Length: 134
Image 1 (cartoon, rainbow, N blue to C red):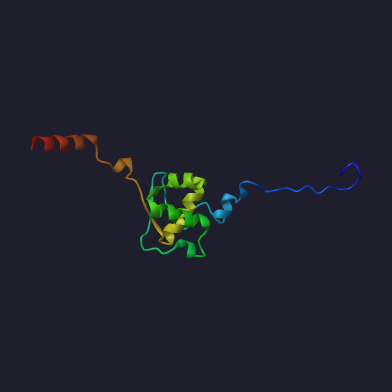
Image 2 (tube, one colour):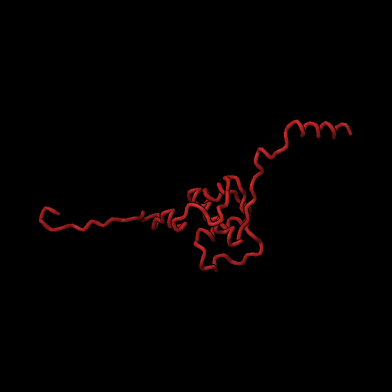
């Protein structure tokens, strides 16, 4: 109450005037923490837009963030970490959004080769030595 006995109405803003309205990460993913297909996306997994896709902005089921991801990947393949940095979104949110796009077949993900599946260094040295012997 104010000193004169009248109640004051304090206005609370949920946004920064310069930044515009804040959208909480769980709102972008509709409360989900994983995509439906449980896609495993490493930070260095590369996301590539499918060439046969039309204009993603025309699809009313996609959020603006989905459209941004497809647009960035259409210009050049992007890693999950690069997309998160470019969009200024948490990695978890970007992973869910990419999973949605994979399900819709708008993008595909190229995963890095796990270190356990890489050839042993001794095998590579033997191959190099064999090539030199030719």
